[in-house]
Length: 171
Image (cartoon, rainbow, N blue to C red; front, side, top):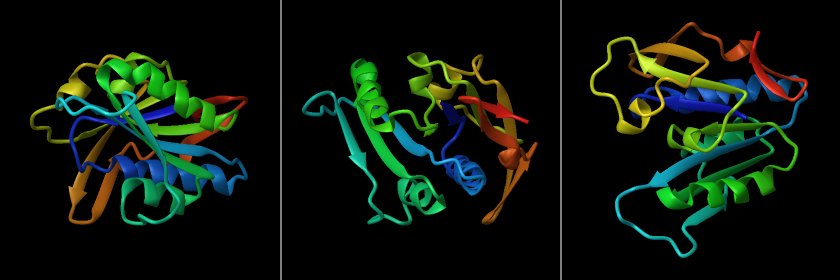
């Protein structure tokens, strides 16, 4: 699994993920993508988790953008914190043997991805608590500068992320 996290909201996480998806699928490798949201505000779900597949009806949402980028399937997993493992197990059943690009900080507590990338602004304000809890885990950190709709990644490695021999790598 390639796991992409971020220290703040609206910092270019999905833009980065879609660039990786485009690059990898252009190379002829089909993959699955997922947005994983851990519910902490006291809301309850029927089974502790909800797994929805994006079918293209939400083109401007993160999941719709991942599908448009070339992912074979895209899912949105929402799970209560105590049901992260069960939700993740259900997601992995859908993924089967395909490479997975997932966006989440919290899920890092229960999975060990082959590559975990953390996206951070060059000038950082307050960290999301979910990012603070996993800051020691990323294999690669990318700093970003936002200029309107333009995002400058440092280092800009989206085209250097590859799925080789069953493992995500920066090459």
